[in-house]
Image 1 (cartoon, rainbow, N blue to C red):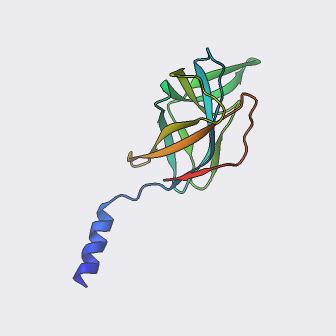
Image 2: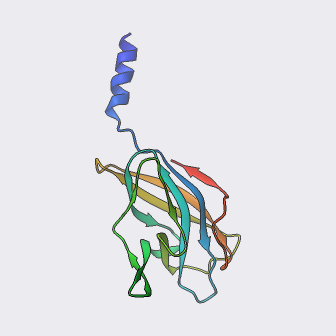
Image 3: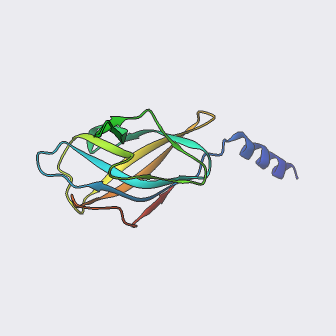
Length: 151
């Protein structure tokens, strides 16, 4: 009985991190001199969390971006974070929210895989990382189901 209580106390001492699922990650291929591209995916979290950071060894700068229409002009800008409401899938897609990879270290070629690290933060300010392997798709690619990554 003491062991069960002790195990329960130890388990209670560790925060339960949000279960975050990343589905269908991919990166758009680039041409040889191109220094930026986008990463796209669907993200679902069991708890309310916020995507606050992304990184990749393939790029010097990685940011979460959104594209918005302002006065008939499509503009892209970095955002401080992206809310991931509990139980709702948030799609990062061309023309919307996406992960922007800038200052690329090399050309992104179809068939390559790009490692990404996503950082999410809960309401309690506790952070969790999700490691994603995103295949590179052709310049003309659109979203399609492929792989799923869980944390």
